[in-house]
Length: 300
Image (cartoon, rainbow, N blue to C red; front, side, top):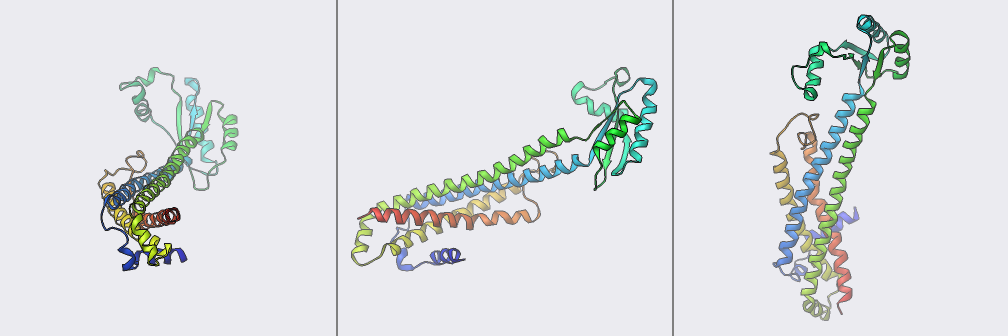
């Protein structure tokens, strides 16, 4: 709270201290442009992180409650083993529904790999049974043991080997988004620090005169901190507004169709980018204050 109060006081500023810093120059444009560009990129990094999180949740929920039983048996035993599998599934706790996947759906699943017109009747394809679990879930190991006894040709696939890599990949992508936001903030802090250092060096004569008339280093530093913090805040507001507008213009699609199709903000997520300008102002405040005090100590 003390730091927030100090930041607010710096933004309000002292009109006399504000005259120490020239109102224009390349440092002003550089600070505003850096803050705007970094805020624009941060909006997209935030959207990417949120979209990756939604995708991980979608993949996890979609695959966690489904399983497949693959039945491989001679033609004469296929129907009997299929009925046995369905009966086992019907009496298994945690199984909501179980249905045999018809041949037309199997053909649709195989077409991307083998092309249209696939003669399923000439291929030794297994019979597939789609299983949907309840919220409580089922005991996969116990079900495997029951299937071995009732239908030796049936194999349960609970999609664990498919689900884990997808969820891990989406989780790492979400972490990468947050890491990108951190790097963007660090880059903005470095650029603002360089701008503040340049402005202080350019006004070395003015600083010497101010010291001669009794101005303290804290007063001089406050003038630079206020000016650069306000410039960063203005640039971040512009960059955030442009970033939100660009994200809003992205095409919309289902959350599960892909990371790019789900890129954007939803619901209350639209409020999160509004936090970027205050964060950018805080970063500029800290970077400029540290730089000003360091440079002032070096000016004699």
